[in-house]
Length: 303
Image 1 (tube, helix red, strand yellow):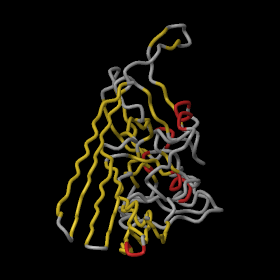
Image 2 (cartoon, helix red, strand yellow):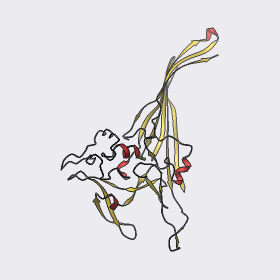
Image 3 (tube, helix red, strand yellow):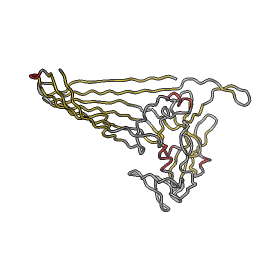
Image 4 (cartoon, rainbow, N blue to C red):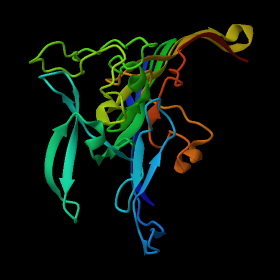
């Protein structure tokens, strides 16, 4: 596997005088990986050849989102049945059925409501195109204010929570998740809806693994915000007293419909290469909890 990329950090003071100080720091990162080689494997006839390897992450109540390991592609490339939307005539889920020639070129593309007839396709990657953060510090006389932001742009995430709770009534012991703004449920012929018809004990298989549940993982998060006030007590042999109030993870802006688009790091990330973890693939499910929002009040003494 070959990784290439860059990291860039820029910072400086916008204003600096006796009363005011305003500084800004920005960092941006980009990484691109490509699988360069696979070991040949033997088929049933004893012939050796290099073949793509399909790996699942071992998650999901209705199947596992897969990725494909193939020379020339990123290692986190999704390999899924491609969602084609909702049939406006009857509200049934649809997927694409693609025919290809011996060279892999697409010959035809049709929609089908038969999940078994849908074909697997290479559909984007989990890793973001750009990631990083920026911070700013502002000081006016005895007051200071600091903020730190983080962001990610261009990645994809498989939302297992939706697969379970946005299942069109497949599971009779679970409530359906609330539809996001801009989503709509099919109700009558002619509806151009984002979601299939909902039925009790629905067996249309619309909740099966597909690109229906792949979403953008873009986000902007306010990681921390701190407001402080410095008191000069040098006449009492105390160099400085600073009182501050701070908050962490105060908000995150994202179009992702799940709990948190920023997947927490796990110690067993390496297990995902063996198909037993989900971090490299970029998948989240009901077991993922949002980042904790915390508020702190503090006092710093300098002698």
